Length: 142
View 1 (cartoon, helix red, strand yellow):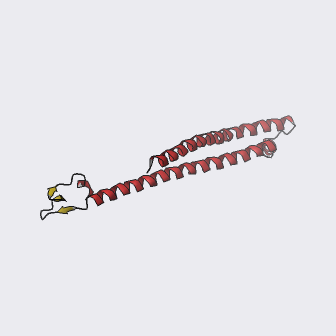
View 2 (spheres, one colour):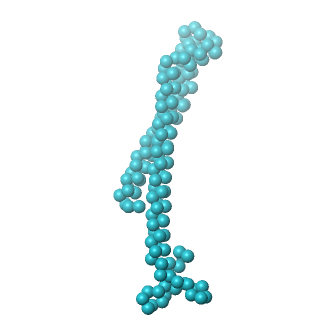
View 3 (cartoon, helix red, strand yellow):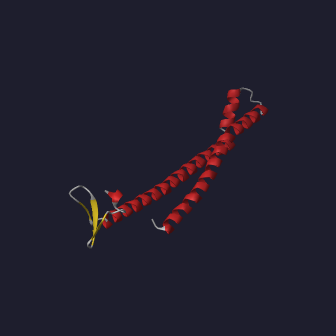
């Protein structure tokens, strides 16, 4: 993997993780604020003469402010999930490129050791011109 590609992917990963953290914080805030807003609206309902808890809850749950908060929560969840999977895609791309690089290094090592032979006792040796030696860099490839 070339350095510029790796740096670009890591930069994207940093930005995405930052955006993801903000999206999670927004989602958590809305999740924790919804019950508070419901309680405030139920209190408003009681102020307006609605005395039963069931009617106060119905009043709160159909209030426009509460419904807007629910829409905001839905958007926050969608954004968080989008960023999470975008982060995973970047991770997968890095892993894929790392695997390709490892495969290329392995193929190069195998290719460079193509002159390695095995004698009748199973010992590996490398023929370089008229010189015979054990292939130290190729030893672990077989």
